[in-house]
Image (cartoon, rainbow, N blue to C red):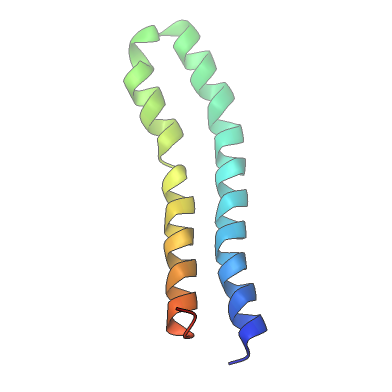
Length: 74
């Protein structure tokens, strides 16, 4: 496979997951703020709900590294 397509695939793996995480956190943030205003005891749940989308970016990065290593990039 040509190197340019390998690099593009790795970049897309991180970019798409980054955009999805940004979209999800953009929706979760206001909802968490509103729920904390009404019930402050939900702080632990709120932190977990904000942290869960971050795993998408981590997994996207892992996939990108696997793509690059499989193509012989390191």
